[in-house]
Image (cartoon, rainbow, N blue to C red; front, side, top):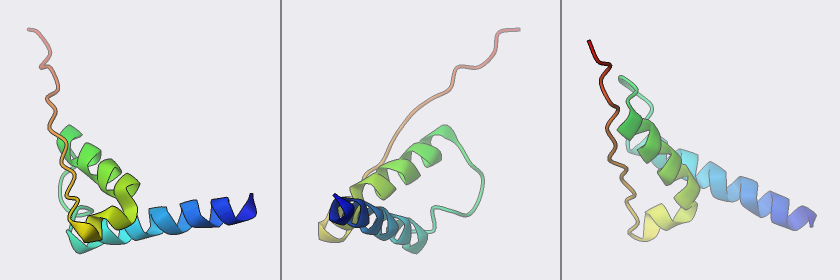
Length: 64
């Protein structure tokens, strides 16, 4: 069971590194950017074999 935990942590660290290489951690934060960062981290090593997850979302504007 311990090896599974180590593998999950390594998977997520690789995903964090991929996001860093793509400059996802700089600039303004939006719904789409936060979703893309989360998807990139979750994809982990798959980012290096062609996965390029992107999330598109819109937030409703408040009514006047």
